[in-house]
Image 1: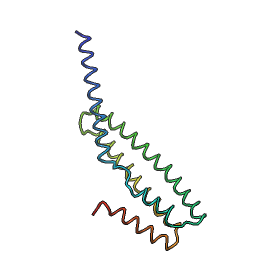
Image 2 (image 1 turned 90 degrees about the horizontal axis):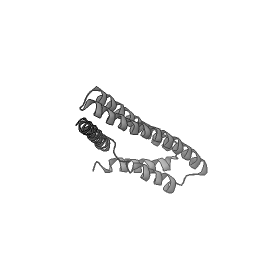
Image 3 (image 1 turned 120 degrees about the horizontal axis):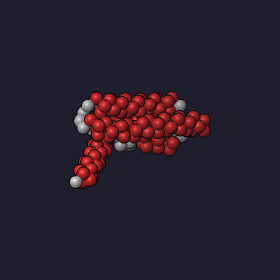
Image 4 (image 1 turned 180 degrees about the horizontal axis):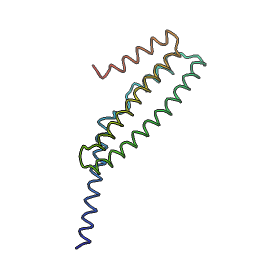
Length: 149
């Protein structure tokens, strides 16, 4: 009989862990949107339509490499936060201080990623001539407002 209770206890813990992980995935999908099309459209514009000179290409490639590395760091932090959130949910079984703390940290990291993305966009723009910057601004504005329509 003790063995049956032990197995039932393990099954209960496994079920709670599964539900916590599922909740973390759902929360993440809600709070961390899929990569917006902004990046791919702006990237295509920069490299295909702006007629960059070789020096611009080199400087922008460096900016992009640096940004991709920073973005990868922040995305890794978000994945780590997801795991922490799952553990906090399993531990607290509700919206307690640990869950709240992880959520606050997740928001901080997501905000940091958004700020880093904007800094990157402005750094790339600074490498453009006036005619290129005008096209760049038009595409960035169109992409950012496309979902608002």
